[in-house]
Image 1 (cartoon, one colour):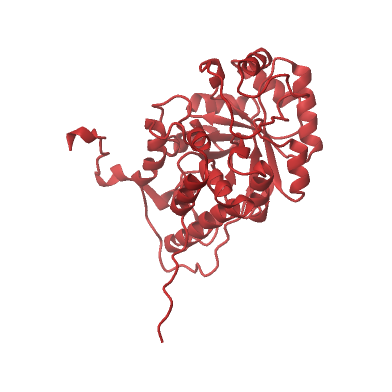
Image 2 (tube, helix red, strand yellow):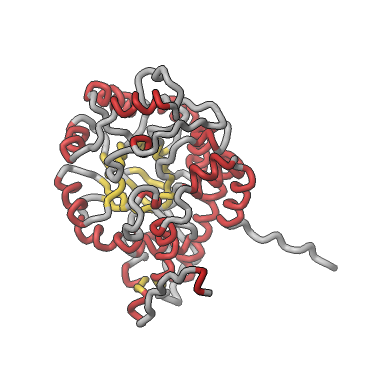
Length: 375
């Protein structure tokens, strides 16, 4: 009897293709920028420079992918990092993203640039693991009120992005018109009298935000919240040590997906140095370029407690709302579980640094990019 052809299991490549077809040119361009940057490309390519050394003949019939992050158990060591304007991808915006994360029992960092409020997202996902990415403001009273809102709404950590001394609207003065209505209820107590993207709105933001922020601002936040504080955007050993000295509970090794300073190292290359510098005094995470379960496994072997994804979550959101986000996380979980089995790891504690080596160990040179005109 003839069998119907098997439908191949979807991958992130399939989800990305679907998202590209569904997103507007404006949304795709905003989410993708800078898709041709050196750092953006290297974040992805760098994972290929690390080779897994599997251990065999171990009982891996059952794999446990759960991990504890900031005192909360998650079913997978993969969480969703802060990204802006989810309304560009789906009508339900961050409500759908949070539901997708909650369905897999993993964490999500809600951005200050979210199109739904802290409270709305909390109400949509009562059992969810939620953290909040907060901006630095000149008005400390406003910051206190925002911290209080975060705690009341049940968020369990504060994330601070430290690699943005100035926001992009200080550089790009052109008005930007969104193709869909945008509201930003987590930035101000009341909506400003200007449309997001307008020249007036940018002036309003420049007057309100503390640019650049300093270690003094980090310390102030640390002293004014009971929640754990995570610094996102650390690439140097010196800054990692400073973060620990200022009471950071976590450090996310990140280069902002290549959207800030181009030409900085890929995050997976920096990760081991940061882990050694921190010496267990804070949890260490990473983001940037994670596209497969083996990418996740490599990051864990090099010392990350968990990884964060940005663009892939947005692709899932555009593909099919909350179910699409859940599907992206499910794909990565299944790939990670299979990679763990093939590497001889049944649980997180089995994932050790000896499981991976850099390709230079085998004398494999790093290939230099050659302009297409040379071919």
